Length: 229
Image 1: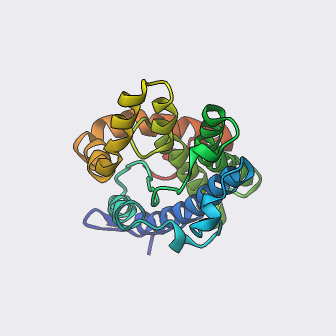
Image 2 (image 1 turned 135 degrees about the vertical axis):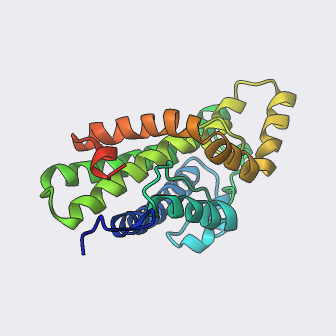
């Protein structure tokens, strides 16, 4: 049976890609959360260790919606080969900025640590794509890992309260405005649903363009085209 044989809109290839994407999200999230906690520790804040976040275990950061429902909804779309940027987030990292030696600088460093980690993972996967054979299944796995890692990088740099981009943007706001802005993180699930699903055309047009460009640069190929999207 051909990998492209479809039952309705469902395809065997789409199912495999969805599985690869979910596995890639797990790897990418475990890496970003560990690196973020390790970076905070190195800058003088021991809170991540005290809260049990200095670990590779997904249970330490797993969020029912951000790490479960959201990736699951995106995976369903991937099974019918409908492209939506891979996205996930974990429970808020326990960081105490008052313990940093230089608060503003160190908050920026910690906030950037996660996206930099997933960017590096994407580059590594891209190098693997360049040296592997184009017809082998590991090629498609590495391609999916690269695209998913780049997508995580782009997603977490968005200025949405609760994500890394918002934490850095809040530093430029007056104290009262910054506090009100950060308090919107309680609505993170709703905001993400609105952006990715209600305004899906914007998400597909803008976010996937950025993630695709990063993936294309890392792999040297057209990622979305080779993933059959």
